[in-house]
Image 1: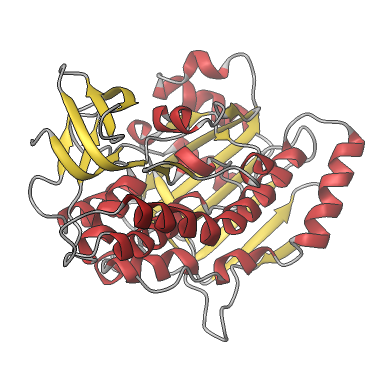
Image 2: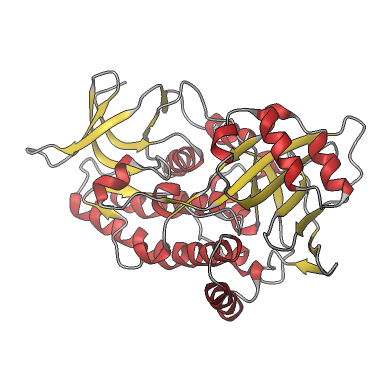
Length: 401
C-alpha cells in the first residue's frame, strides 16, 4: 500500500465499502482501511426497504442481490394483550409498489466488495490516531503496524464509536437500554410462512418479536426487551442467548417459540444498539476540513425503523456525487476549496434526512425503554403528528449517482 492516497475510507463495513464503490463508479479511486482480517460478514440480516434498493440501483448491485431474498409482500403487527392485528406499511413511492427484502449482511458486503478494483480494501489495518500535517494540512493516519498514511480526504465509516468522529468533535454515542437478539432459522423442507413480516408485541414490560422470511427455507427473526443485568454476561454464549430468549417469549405464539427453539445457534447475536441523539446533528458540521463522516459514525440509531443500513447506502451515493465535482478525473490538482464546497453540500443534502430518521427511531425507542408515563405519551403524540405514516421514510430517493 502506498503511503499517500487521495481518498482514504476508514472502516470496511457496509458504509465504507459502499462509499468506495460509489466513488469508483464516478471514476475516483480510494483506499479502504479495515481493522478486521477479512470482510466483517458476521451478523444477521439487514431489512432493506424501497429507499435502500434505490441506492443499491445507483451502486449497480441491486440486480445481483434481489435473487438472494424474497420480496416481503405485506407486514402485520399483533398486540398480544388485545389480539388486535394492524397492517404496517413500508411506503409506496409515486404509485410504485414498495420493495422490502431481508438481506443477509454477508451477501450485501460480498456483492459490493466483489465489484471493487483489486487493492482497494486493506485488511488488518487499524487506524490508531489521526492528526493534521502542519505543512500540508492534510490528514495523517497512524496505523497499527507503525506506518503513516497521508490522505487528501478522509471518510470516517468506522462505526458508532468512531475515532474519526472524535476528530470532528462528535461525542461518543450512547447505549440504548434495550437488548436485541437476532438470528436465522433454517427449515430444510421449507418453512410454512407467507412472504409477510410479522411483529408481535407483548403487554408491559414490553417484549417485541419479529419474523421475516429471507428465502423459502430461511427466516430472519429478532427479539427486543428492556436490558437486564444478565444480558452482557451471556453475549458471547449462543446457548445461553437461546435459553434467555426462549424465557422471554414464553407468552408468545407457539410458532414464534418453535422458530427460536430450532434456530441455528451459531447465527445468534445479542447486543445493545448504540444511538446518537438527533439534535446533536442539527447544527453541527458533518466534516472538519477534508475529514467527513458517513454511516453509523455519523448517525447511529436504534433498529426500530429498519433504516440504518439503507441510510448508510444513501450517504455513500450522495457523498460520491458531491465529491465527484471536486475530484473529477480530468483535474490533476485537488482543490481544497472545491473539496470544502463538496462536503458542505453533502451536509446540506443529508442533514434533515438523517435527523428525521434518528428522531423517529429515538421516539420509538422511548416507548420501549423504562421512562415516565408522561414521556411515553409525549413520544407517542410526536410520532403520530410527525410520523403518522410509518412507511414514508421508505419513499425517499437519494438521487442519481
